[in-house]
Structures are given as C-alpha cells and as structure tokens.
Image (cartoon, rainbow, N blue to C red):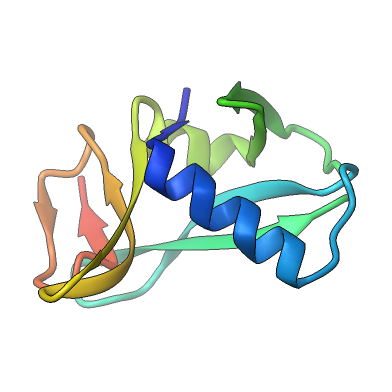
Length: 108
C-alpha cells in the first residue's frame, strides 16, 4: 500500500484542480530504471486502468501502481515539502537501501 501525508494530498488536489481534471483521474506512481542510484520515482495523473494495476486509496485519493512498481513501493509514504531546504514530493520508502542526495532515485 502507498499512503500520502496531508501536505501531499493537498498539493495533489491543487495540481488536479489547476489541470482541470475530473474525478475519473487518479495518481499513477511508478518506478523506472535510471537516476544516480539505479531506480527513479515517477508520478503522473491518469484516467485509464492498465492490466495488472494495483489500486489503493488514502485520504480520498486513488493511487495506481503497476505490479513491478508495487514490489518496490509497498509501504511507501508520499510527502510534500515546501521549505527552504527543498520543495517537492518526497518518497519515504522502507524498501530502499540507499537513496541519492536529491531523493529522486533509490536502490534496493
């Protein structure tokens, strides 16, 4: 399961409203090869389910993961920071054995 903090949920809601997306859209979170640690996170809005998608809901937000990404992201919490030390989404991934300095890639 992937969860979101209140700050991340608020920011995602704001981004969806800015893009004029209706309630048929959900957040798709995935893992791709790349980045300085080997694997990188990807997020996008989608309204088409794909074969093998795993769906979760947290705080009223639907989140989709493909099966490969689910194996890497199970138990992950998505947060958002807008402080002086950095702004953006952060993945708190208990499966990551190492993360890069920017927090956008990881390895297991």
